[in-house]
Figure 1 (cartoon, rainbow, N blue to C red):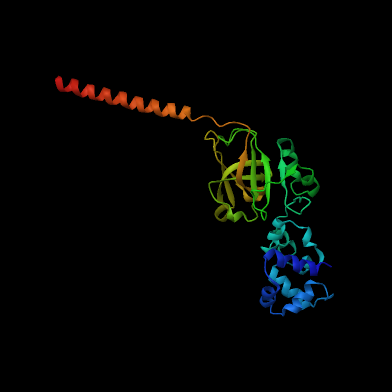
Figure 2: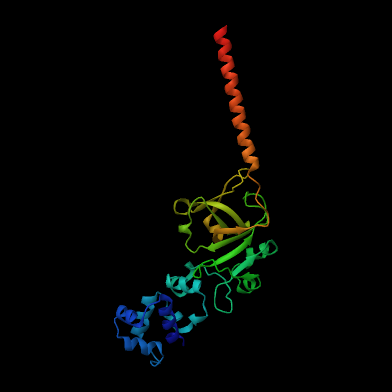
Length: 272
């Protein structure tokens, strides 16, 4: 049973002292300490219910799951109330991997794994086979994954770029006109700007940055995962601004020439 170590780990994650937790639970500090150090071998049902309600974690999880083996993202999801024993089928269970320090890995989905990810995204064994790395500039309590994109629909983000994205649990929080990586039943992995129509029509409207591609709708039931765009990595150097500058100069030159022609025409009409 992991009850003692779990309530101690959860208190540590919340960064609260025993005095604070005991006061909020309505018990003495010595009683809380006895639960945390394991001197109470069989906590009462009332105590289990109190800790369960306080941390928003099911009794089953408090007793049976070793929370010390979870990463910060998984712990943060638990403390948000996303416990599978509480939410049941409503929870989107994310297959993930941890490094030797129980820190969430950033798994990499290259193009060669794109087809396999469509069917294996929820399979822990498949996810474990993906390359993984750490990036210290990202938040520890969030989940990230890196996807390699292909095609020119999201230009100026070039073909074969690597997109780092953050996992989105609550799809109602998707911000319209922001970029997301979506996993859909039909297309698999797609990278698009999304217009959130879930509340109104249970739809998402997907837009490309490249205007040559027309937007299209996808039913929310066709979507399996959503990842919010954070940044991207590319080996291509962006095109220089010279072309745009030259175009602007050409337009200005044409406007000046047109103005000269108008002035000459006015002078000729005045002399006629």
